[in-house]
Amino acid sequence: MNERFVPGAIAEPGLLRATPTAAMVTASYAPDFERCRLLCETLDRHVTGVAHHYILVEARDVKLFRRLESANRSVVDERELLPRWLHVFDDPLSLFRRRVWLSLKTQPLRGWHVQQLRRIAIAAHACQDVLVFCDSDVAFLKPFDCGAFWRDGKARLFRRDGVLAQDGHDEHRIWSRNAGSALGIDPSRNSVHDYISTLIAWRRDTVLAMCSRIEEVHGRNWVEVVGSARRFSECMIYGRYVDDLLDGAGHFHGSEEFCRVHWTGEALSDDEFRRFVGAMAPEQVAIGMQSFIGTDTGRIRRLIGLDRS
Image 1 (cartoon, rainbow, N blue to C red):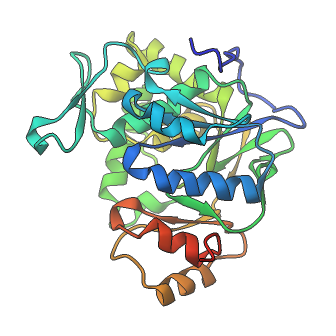
Image 2: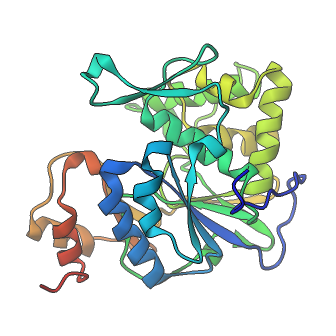
Image 3: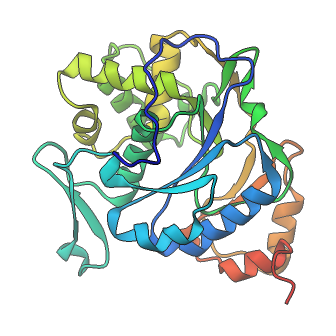
């Protein structure tokens, strides 16, 4: 085991300590390195209440991301987190431009699948009470304290009520059903809630209990169970575990999104970017520019005032 980690004991979900410790968790990869560097700079500038920042990457990206390490930030090799039987290769079907994770125990998995598995797996290695998840294409623009994620000893679970009952959420409904299957929830017990966002928090003890539940139900490693269905969401699995199986124990719900994200479409012009930032809700402290949209990181740095050249 990597000497950076102090494994934490599995605990029953209950009340958090009055002042729990929090870790920021970011799953990333080489093409997002500059975006991740920007995240780190803005996190260090604006965010308080973080005991440590874990950056989770595949083995070949570790050396690159080590440049971002500090006393309170470490890079975690996925080999420290995931089973050794899950192997990564350059994918010939994409002319070796993409990576694929293969095993005899799961479906073929892409990078976005494995990033989700890493986010779950870090709970067994971190020692902080609360895990705050933030994508590498996020930048903090305003002061933020991670104390926003707990109240009266309970952790904040992001949930948008009733969304899956509306039209246009077919993929999310599939993720929710597959989450229920992984957790052994009666298929007739459908959920209509959406738990997916960035800049959200999970209790570490609850994640560990969730993984134990999956293994008890199926008699297999939780990675094998989750990876057997390629259409899954780690947020849906955690949310349904808390609400359907724990009846919300140890958590309170919040629907406000702390990060304003530009999910789809074209890269924003300078004026569009300024309007996007100007439209941030009062509770929003960060922005996310989805990396596949292609917004130049240098432009973002300039527009948020980090590069004054």
